[in-house]
Image 1 (cartoon, rainbow, N blue to C red):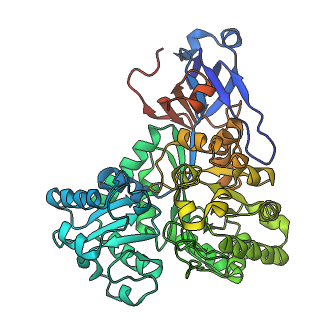
Image 2 (image 1 turned 90 degrees about the horizontal axis):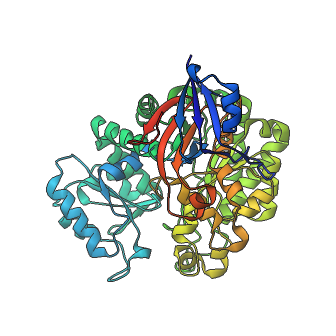
Image 3 (image 1 turned 120 degrees about the vertical axis):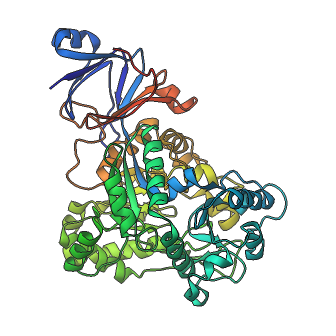
Length: 527
């Protein structure tokens, strides 16, 4: 078996994730054999230790070597459709959004027009409202059209698509002329997904995985579920991942017994019953569950989809089945429900049993230090998305529009979560925010609220070793670069770690997953 020796670089491993500050290791050389890191040290040590005739040497010329990033929360097909379909994230006006739909309708012969990313709160001119259904029907020339909002918790649909889900009109969240949310959105989204051809789905998944690999990502956690994608979609993605980033699949379906948990896992092919199992919705769509009303919708406190008793039953069932449980939760009322559910579960099976399963929570945008400390006691991982703050934080961002300045400044308290002892795992929630791990690291380091900021070391650990930890027991060698660890790493054209964190986004030269090169830039490394 050939030994690959990387020389003349900056080999940086931010250490294992956890409640303590990660201890980084820096070197200039690394040896890999098969799927395992054999050795890490200096160039001088490497030349003493290895016979040049027995190794394949790669000259790094000062390049930065890091553990491959882990994106702990993605929706691969939807993110891929953003690459292959209609990207509305750059639209700055209502007119631009409608023009983009017209252009797609003029050139696409697909049975469904699919787009994503509109955000009326960021439109700079003209009416700051979503398009009406009549405007969409005109722009799409009467064809089926699905346009998810940036948070994917509401969507605009054409009349032609709505007719394929006739029951949606009687469900909570239905609007006769505006975005659909809650149950009405779920019903229409299922209908839209059913219209995607297998070829569309596979092309989207391949595009997403290829793009992720080119950004130094070695593993993604797919957050699938009945109201998000579908079993076929998840199984196709798991099959498609050969040759690309590893995929850890989660299925967001509620269970109430260990037997039911095992049946659902077997039927879905998932790794765990976690991810986007919705306790509440999202702030942008005003469906996150709040204790106090929305500032810009005083008659609404959002939507709570699960009770504390349901949370407890699910956590106990998964714990007894030996698998991870987890939930999507954003608003403060939603977080309170989850904390109460975990407390009830602990009374039934014990804290130690909960901690042994490494259960996880997605987003946790409105959480107090006391709640974080309690969840840390149950061994819960915080799967969070720093680019949310970059996109919507600050005094004038969407959070402030929806909640007011005081509540907005307390959003996404990463430093408080870390100090409370909750392991952090970073993700993008793609297509909600871009697959860009360096942007996530920078967003955590430069959070709008200074007290929420993380050090570069902690942020990097959260996007590498933290992601490996978030996949549950049995993956202790991922996310670090040391002898005996998995050979999953990325090589970056960066003049040191500080430049990569605070300067322009570095270029990925190579991404390797357990010894397998899944991305190689042209002329990246020399022998």
